[in-house]
Image (cartoon, rainbow, N blue to C red):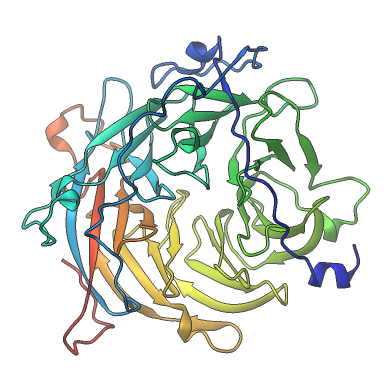
Length: 460
């Protein structure tokens, strides 16, 4: 592919994805062991496909996408106040493992939110009940968040993502992907938590190689699966081991065109699905082009391994964050290698610390210090422009590792928690540190009506 072709990559319309039929994994029980036990790596057996939703049976009745009386603000929400409206605390300890949350993602239709827990469990929570009531006033005390589905994986969960065309009005589209250590990639039903299908990345010795990152193509027909030195493309409608395998560290390539290491993050541009980005724990970010995965550019600038990548809505910007690295870098995809803006945050551990970008061009970032910081990307002018904190608030007394913006309502979800080490060796539960918190919270953003300083920080 020459430079002219790269500059003129165009989106092509394709028919909607055909979701895979439900394939019951006879070895699923061996892959979903109690937390604390070592997962048993094994290949996926050949399974007989069963339909997800039989055409002879009625589609299950489901709730509407979102409360009708709650609408996103008509004007851009750039100056706002923050109110905690709901929370769900997770016990610190179970009989076998210390618990803490590890990120969250709203469903594409906004009806529920997905969380990752350190006990190798994914949990789906519905919207708080007060949002469905006629009154539009916010509760005086944080409401509870009802838990809907619990999904148990067989090992440490590395990544998870929603089916991009998910709608609660169509039961067949309500599904999600997850990948865990030494296990196949699993497609789960979001209504009842059953296993729909499995996809097995196979290594050179014919064993299952656990994936470290996942990303759907915008049309939902395929998904990208990252592992050590490789990116694999699976057809969602064809479970099993068949996939397209792309090596990022080929021995015939010059060193400047190689991207070695564990593929820790993948993102696909919605504006231009022929371009995708790959992040590595070797601190590099690669831009690649379909249909054959040809390298466009390798980007270097982080001091730690890449933990998250995200394209802007128009596809002209790529945001990257890394572990033990205080910078979120905004790259110009029109001129690969050019840095447009740098946002400073607090990331002092190896955790994945999430960020998200709003329709109003605001970037929300979690911080290991317990704050959520907001940056106005419209302030980025020129090259290597530092963007200051527009607003911040304390979301937890512990580390905030997850932040996700609701797709249609002025609402933000956060998750908190991290591993705490008992240096004194005490077994007394009363000796828990005061700042330890493992909690899912939801925050409502209210447009400011007064001329208060938008840069003031809310630190309760």
